[in-house]
Image (cartoon, rainbow, N blue to C red; front, side, top):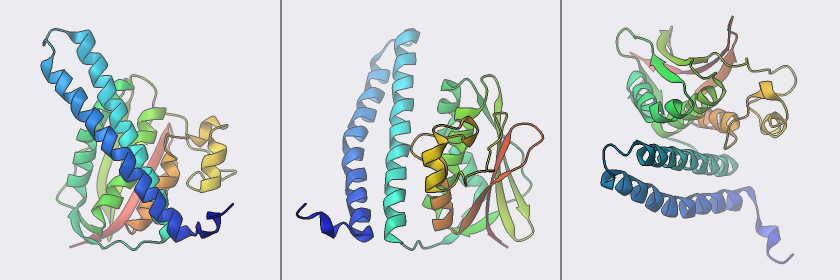
Length: 234
């Protein structure tokens, strides 16, 4: 077909970025209007408020999938990301706040374990946040109702570590790497591959790599665990 031969990785990367931008515009308007409606309803109208809260959670979920679309495009373009010093604990606290409503909608809670001192790392903040977001959404999605998704921030030598733990089925990486593209394709038909919307684990791994971090699953006596590791400073 005429024009199809110019779809190099670089061009596809730019096209996916354009699509992500085009998706964000109507989604932003939808999110704003739902927020406006929430401000207009009577405080005691619990059913309407609950429906609008669910709509906002869905908007946030779509926003994350759009972010992942852009991450895939950026991976095709092999873009380099500048890094700077940032607070690992502050980044995790923001993520816990952001996903508390999503956790509530899945009937689970988020628990951030106490940390000692400030852990600063060198990374790209946006990509590290995207990696953590995708991991958290996976744990929230697969955690049993009534359980907790636990987050822990710690230092391990010269490495800052974020652990995300849940009581869902442990990730089975015995056949295909769940953080790979092929692993995500096959995950839809394997419950213990723990597929999450928007190619979550693949995009988590791509974002972690772009941030200069490492992502892996970690064995747990019960449930499942993920670790994000990034170079610490100080």
